[in-house]
Length: 150
Image (cartoon, rainbow, N blue to C red; front, side, top):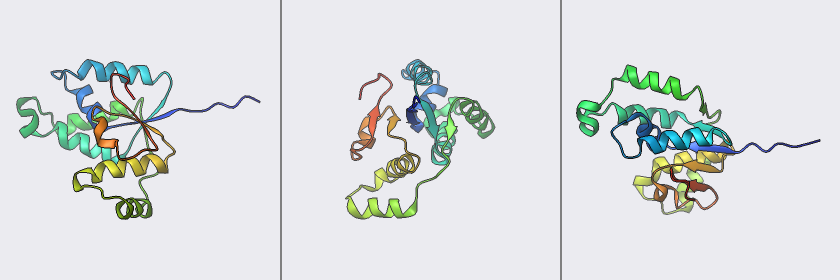
């Protein structure tokens, strides 16, 4: 009997933001990379990514006149969820606690650590991001950027 191995890839918030923001240099590359990955990976995001996305893309201080409404952001999330799955399990507190106590993690990396813990809980070993450095502390996952560099 043939066994199929499902490749799973977590999508970082910044990929979705650039996918949505047409004036970014990363806009087309994000779209292309997501399209490419759908051919060989099962894609995932978490509730944290959804909230980070909405918080970022609606921020008038960041996007000025290009910020979108919460309604539009939610519509975008609905679109993303047509080809990206929502993780079924969120990060376990005990895993987070263990990571916090065993590593000297900077405060600025707490949300990245939560993404990492969510990935582990959902048996996802790959993440697509624009900021590879955000995940360099986590040696047991594969980090790829929109150029395909690992």
